Picture 1 (cartoon, rainbow, N blue to C red):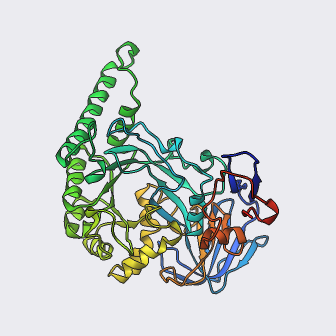
Picture 2 (tube, rainbow, N blue to C red):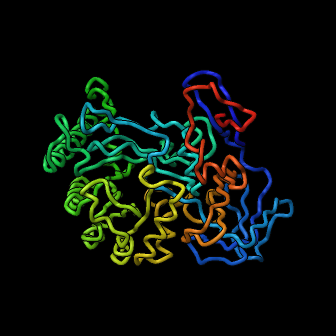
Length: 440
């Protein structure tokens, strides 16, 4: 339920926020839509039943619907899993600072503004789960966070936890020109790789000291939060999400991965189409970004729409991401459309914004497809997901509706216009709650 606030103080929050509602006690049935389960064949005139935040039934028109279920007639619509963005910066997170190039102890958990307009826009784009990253100006800029884009007032309400209880997230790394600066940052590609290698060797040494101490506290090394995070990477508990563009930089990342054995998702990979066979042989997945107006850096000059199709043919698991604000989260489905236009199959492209992306976040058992027992994350569209004419009408997370295009405020998030990106106000001289919170 979205709640409007007016706090008459300078620099305080303005806008619509939302509290996470408890999971529904009554089942809800969505009937009549063309359902795209992703993990199985499309279903015409399908039925989706959700209860208490989970999918309980998905099938054709003969599917049993609980007698007391609330029915939603979505005839003529398309219903598919909630979209998964494997690389986003919504919420304005900053982690590492300029003091050193490798800072694995920094967490975007401590830096995300959950009331930022970007989260509402992502919902409007059908995104229900996102990997929120710090920036790429460091070789290692900190711990990422996998979030459910619920309506909430605190970051804790958006968190996903692993089966072991750890907050779900990866580690952001980068190479190429982004991390090349004045000392103490590296000035060359060779030095960049050397610093990363030295950090992982230091973490291995830290582990040996901890193991040698056994249960003797007097022999334990001083606690090092950065080393602990690096060991999570080396132990495979925390996936490395690595910003990289050029073919030689991609090879450097693969070389480091082979040496230290960490789990890896290649992010961006503008020149992946040049070495698709190398990436396939390494069995490393790629999350790609596709732009309709490339530019900005020479490293990305060879970015091509054909990358998705080339990687698919090579056997590389491929997903898409927004890198929001590079790509607007509201237009995420365009990336899949671009890829299909350039040779990728529809099935792989739709999987790339859902199930393949979920796999890269280790969340494939919970999200990414419409299957019994999975989280009730889904979107309702008025047409083909790959058509530029199609509108997302509703977005649901854990069985709660978080976006409804028919709602005036939600429609503002979806289409832009005055007030759509103004989560904070610096003056209250012209604010009028009775006029929908708009400046007069």
